[in-house]
Image 1 (cartoon, one colour):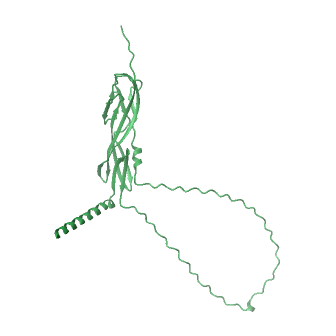
Image 2 (cartoon, one colour; image 1 turned 180 degrees about the vertical axis):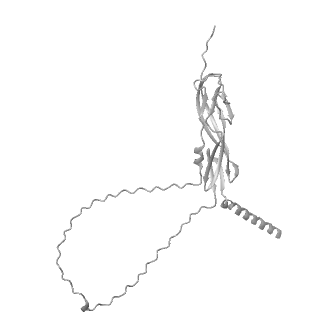
Image 3 (cartoon, helix red, strand yellow; image 1 turned 135 degrees about the horizontal axis):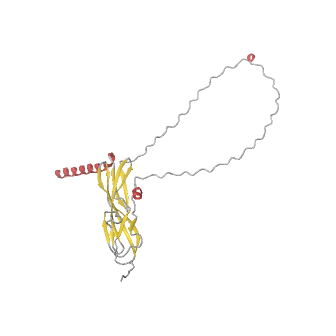
Length: 253
């Protein structure tokens, strides 16, 4: 039974040391995590426990009232003669009409919003959405290549400061083009007009088609010179309409 008791004591000691190590992870150095949730990029940072200290002012001390020294009585033969009273003319006071005081309504106090550590909306607004363009712009023809491209950058970088920590986020886009006739094309290129564009498609039938571009953002973030991957992804959808026509046929003798 003695060896069993020794083993149990070692397990309990290890468990306490492990839990205390986990609790102290974010006290000296900040813990940072960048991930996606509901198609948004979220940056979270935690460092210790934030506490606000308030100083309590001491109550003011009561003033010490010193006793006034008593004056000795003056003999009656040294007192000055009383002055004769002279009748004064009555002073007629003019009535002053006071202007009514108009009280201004007090302005309501607006409470300032407290910013939380979560910056989910900040990076979401910075991630751009693609604008779809194609060439020829006016009534592309059947069986003639139509060139597509978007106006997104090849690299998106953003520096965020949170609780005194600097975090650099780098995102790269990838694209899935759906041309509306069942054909798709996956690429990491943003495309370009003719003749340099690599994204083009031939329509075999005339008609109105809806072109859909799905842009997926993936990337990494750097904190304290350590590079980590962003958990998850952000997907943005762009749509454009295109009308494909047939060319008129002419016969030459």
